[in-house]
Length: 156
Image (tube, helix red, strand yellow):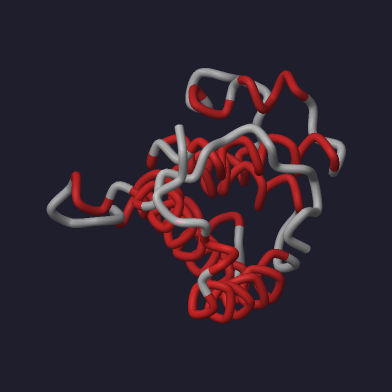
């Protein structure tokens, strides 16, 4: 598959991406790196973004995450390898990514569950992280960015 656009050659895209990367760095430190990568991976799987799925699997492994847990992210409800806090973050990521699938968006139950594990600062950062990865997923899916060539740390 060939990309519809070479995004790194589009000045406006690269200028905007620098800001999005900065925003990602600003919020990712609010909770464990593993949680951030799991959230990014799950949203990317839901959105069918091969580029981001590849990226976040590789970044997670590079950061020390186990392949076993990464293999189970799509089935996190049935897999006992995730903490309650990670499950709450994954649930919020799923509902925040699938907002068009439910008339009410994120349920009060999912929000309350996340609030049991994260303070307001962390919840705000988690909402931003979910929003940011969804932005990147859409950018890559719309332009059909091919997956597989990403190297950990490639984009800073």
